[in-house]
Length: 436
View (tube, rainbow, N blue to C red):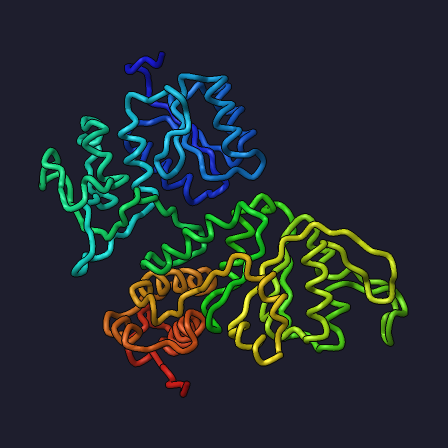
């Protein structure tokens, strides 16, 4: 049994460094002793040495199967409270006497952004990330804090009377009739709008699987960022992430670029070369602008997706490769298939798990966070600049046909126009109207 008087101790097991940092910061502030682990094997070693009160683990681990790992920990260390990052208990019987503090830390780490309640929708009270003072959390019971972490349908529209206004700043959020799951932000994915939280949720769901992903969205929305996130959160994270833009390579060379070629296979092939597919063995191949792939090459691509085998140009030998394919397009591939420009069978093979990246005009609330990110990045190579309030208003009034990429370029141009000034003013924000 765990002695309540002992120092609070916890192991954080996740490949997501940003998640571990947020959890560590919150738990340390509540006087917990924290150890971090990027994988299951490292977490096991920490538990053996550290003998923690609890283990907080991500949905998946890069080296071990999460469910089996949790079961093994519960068997070997029955006194350790094992919780997933959504607050779900994964241990049988074990329960930390301070689980309410762990649940609060998970709530903070999730950076849950509640949306305003609209007419006809159901609302539940959820605390803001900094809502519960450290002293209050230490004294509160799990029953008092649980409604603020995982809203239950029975609590909908009812605010717990045991939590005073002076101590908790409650906000309203739209929830479904099912238990609301925590959406943990992904490093590199900027924005906390509802559409971005949904995109984050989908990425976290599909990343641990081997499913082919089709990323759809307008030009400049950040489809490659999404593909990279899927790769980093998958079991292939330590393997290659190869990128090929199908629109950037001449049709005559695209097949050789994808599948490789032998010496003398065609004019100019003075040496043999490994293709992008083979180079991504064990990892992920990202095919950007898949809609630009020639129809004659699509059949060969479909064959590879179906059986995992390829033939280099000029060679009869079949090579078996283990590669996960993520494709992206700004085109409507179904429409292209109807017009005979894209194979319908290839479309269905690619779109096992379709993901749509929202246009910037659909998430205007994310502009301040994106601005901060881009200004910080530019500040790494030049003096850091700030954005004037009037300039921010002007950015929010634009419809952004070029999406996030256009925003980055507008800010870069504004920083140049600002010269030696540390502030980018409204006069430095030069926007161009593009006819759709």
